[in-house]
Image (cartoon, rainbow, N blue to C red; front, side):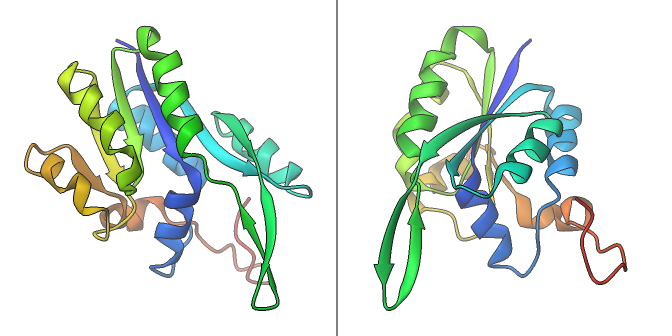
Length: 171
């Protein structure tokens, strides 16, 4: 049985960082493989020049990266990088539809409600992994059916650990 994960990287990353911790991407990929049998993990991410080593690392960890071109805009003197991956995630979940038995969606974003509802209706939704308890109210009905798993509750096993060498984290 093929299980694919479709991961909204920005929602996941910002969701755990808002709680004061960083996700260990290698441990997370291992968790997806071991707990849910995820054979392919599609990571949807904005493409930013200078992040090539991060992208190489994520690929080493076993993610299939799907890049979204980013836009830069100024707001209150700061440069804001915008790379909304919603359309790409939905599109790839449907392109790959015949290739997986079950799908795991990693997001807390209600914009994916229609995709999640469709996958549930077709018997293809395995789980929704939400970064925290602050996920969209549009996804709440899926909690009643035990689809939602909160990543914040897995912090102790998925948190990036410090190495002690100048306070840097392991790559």
